Length: 80
Image (cartoon, helix red, strand yellow):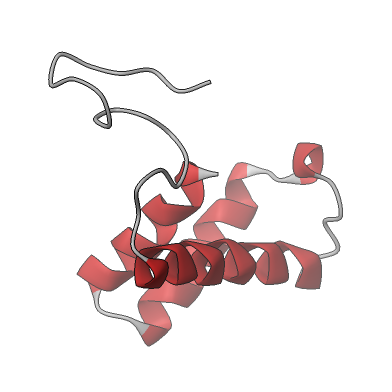
């Protein structure tokens, strides 16, 4: 269940509500990248993810994308 803020419905909520198909596709790509990354490191359960895995994921993103795009990709996985 998401939380809302003082801006009203649709703000401060989690999940893909009222998102364009391209936005949802980007969310899926970002989550897939993270799952693939930790999978290559042998992680098969969420509880196995440690700070070092997240740091190495960010480093991998920065090797491919601009800092702004890497930040967006990293932040998108928080939506799920």
